[in-house]
Length: 304
Image 1 (spheres, rainbow, N blue to C red):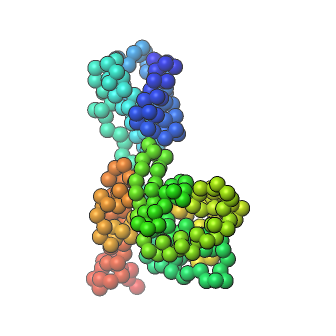
Image 2: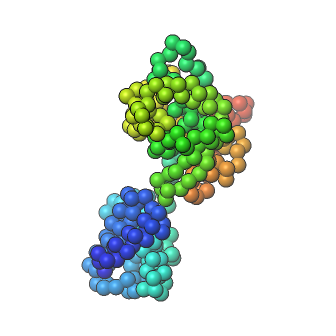
């Protein structure tokens, strides 16, 4: 049912029109292929024969095989996209997948830094005697925390993406090649100002990356992760410092300070507000913890 010509046409649609990331595109093709094989095993020979009950049975079969709710939701999204494509092309009268709700996914709250940990990590400035790498690593940490950039976004920053006068990064993200302007504050600007002279010494001719190694090449994602982990250990953090913790800290601290959720969504580059709303749960956790510590009649206070 899902032949090579259809796969090629759908892949072109997902890449050119939907602008999906390569890994997501491959997953969608794999999901539709699995559904096609499942339907053929159950006697169907065309997509026009597909009904919502059969699609529900396919998802239920996935549950029995141990697939996670998140995987099943992706599979349903892939099928919706495929049937919508057939509908748009005039090969299908209706999209039965639109009638089906995906399984609920339990959302884990992201691990982040509290404001005191962020201050302990970033407040002590490098001195003239500090190792040069520390100056660079502090600049990376400050920019992560100030802007909420993803790891891939910071690793991909070029000099042409930085506007030091306006304190703005021009960011292009791989998920659909979305572009956005991301501001950063005075502390990050100061940290970058201390780093620029070192970069001028280290960078090889023609290197465009903002953050480079002492050998002069762009720092990769793995190297950035390792350097931030080392910075966290140096500053006495009790848990491993990861770039995503700084991104989550940026967002959650903005929400705790009363920032508009839509503005935080735009800053982080989330396509859906529901993704950003998880930081309101972190904000509630912060409020609940403060209540437990401060209110004399808190029922959750431990009793001796």
